[in-house]
Length: 189
Image 1 (cartoon, helix red, strand yellow):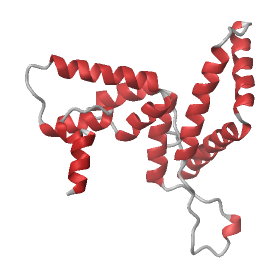
Image 2 (cartoon, rainbow, N blue to C red; image 1 turned 90 degrees about the vertical axis):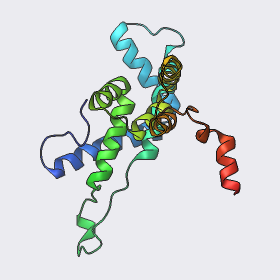
Image 3 (cartoon, rainbow, N blue to C red; image 1 turned 60 degrees about the horizontal axis):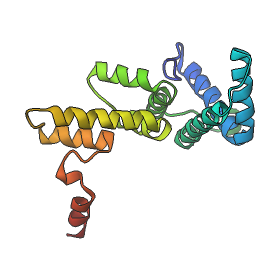
Image 4 (cartoon, rainbow, N blue to C red; image 1 turned 120 degrees about the horizontal axis):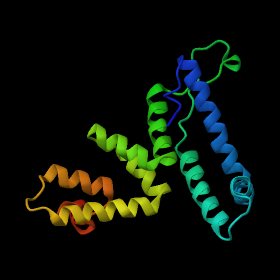
């Protein structure tokens, strides 16, 4: 699952990889839904020879949701404030912001793989879960149900820190301190 930060080569090559992906995302968002539907229909027709009814709208909606999410998450390039020739320079993206965006891009483009990789590493990132929640809501709902099911089957309670972590990542009330009423009460005091 190649991302802008995984591009081999220099920092400039990674920046160029990001610029190309950002331009693709911005173009998709600017083209509008009708153009996206046409592109999806054309792609399906090229692969299958026909376009099943209803599938184009579903796939176009999913693609639009992903493009809108990524478009809102694009990191802003920074210019060199001390440059004497700013008009000749290509503004760069901070390496940390580029790395963070690459994680979100991977979660949007390959949600199952991104999850599997993070689980294998022994940690789930909030950015990954947010990207999946916003762009793959059916998958996120399945994950929520699995977490709730696993917690219900436990014979021993989880430590507080783990309950809060799971609750935040999966947007489920795993501890009374995460309940909206509790938060509202604390905020009033």
